[in-house]
Length: 144
Image 1: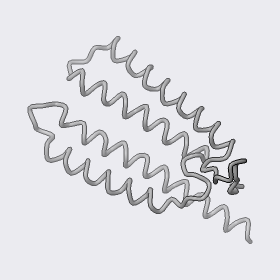
Image 2 (image 1 turned 90 degrees about the vertical axis):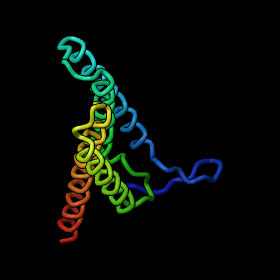
Image 3 (image 1 turned 135 degrees about the vertical axis):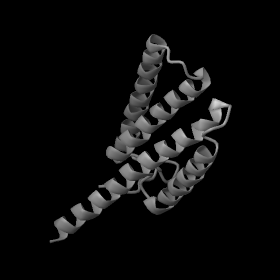
């Protein structure tokens, strides 16, 4: 279980050692997803804006990092609560989806990126909410 720990300086550690290790592995996962995506785009060479493709690759890598951290229980510091992050993800997803939908037919393809970022945030939000619900169900079962 998660516990607050203090370093030798008396500072509260935000992440325990297990979480730091999991975050490092998640960063590797995100990097590998991004590199694999860019490799595939380089081979296929789709007829789409290269800027949009590269930003989308970054979104995939970021989503892979966040989802891996959530699954490995390393997304939140030990003492934090997920409610604030859920609200931030909801706000970010709504703003990006609204902007992406209203600018979808824009001549500049880069403006379509907001739609992709909004979808990425919704996916991360769904995984996060699913994890929180799964943990709450697990706690209830342990109490019974």
